[in-house]
Image 1: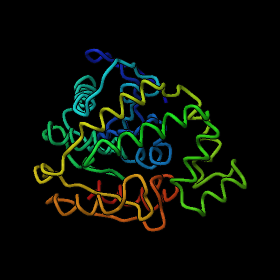
Image 2: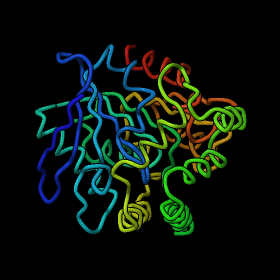
Image 3: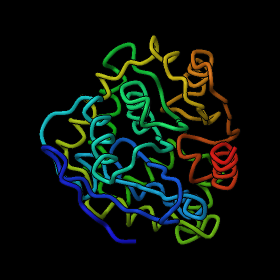
Image 4: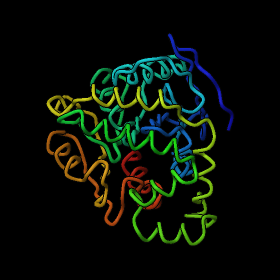
Length: 276
């Protein structure tokens, strides 16, 4: 896996291309305060069938960190990266904040999207309280450092079964792909800065798609988790009601990190949907 950089307007984005060189493209958009490697549990399965492009959002990982942020800027970055890579159309998958970016991308650039996969995400926040909670939580995690931050995240967002297993053995591999130790190492590499977190929280405040969701005509797979505290299942049930061409999958006994703790089930659903 070779990292590359694309100079796009005021920002340089770090990206990787994996899988079949001549495969159909799929773009992976990561969430709040993390980076492209958070897709570690999905890329291997996807790469067997597709040309996989994962990238660091502006203000994340190895991408540049210009000041200010609006959710549409993240959507524009996605479109501009596709143009840079000469990709006319692709499947687009987003998790959490990545799912919010993907919604805005599909609304603004419908001609660039084939199928859409939205994982554990929302259509917006009724007040600024939600983004402020995100911000305070992530800033607190930065103060803790990567190891303590991981365990705090695990307590809040991983199902109790996995949490107990990981605490007992941080080196235990899940599905032959990742361990708690791997995730901690990922957090320690190219960490977010406090300003990155503030910018992303400001972007969350500009996200509001509920009244426009019916404009998304693309086939869409919505993946929710029954124990997700950050983006509760009810939000995605409401999205499903609004989106005319959507399918809803609820992963039982899973939290916000369902793509990592329920990898086989999540990956099978994604592949079955994309290959239909």
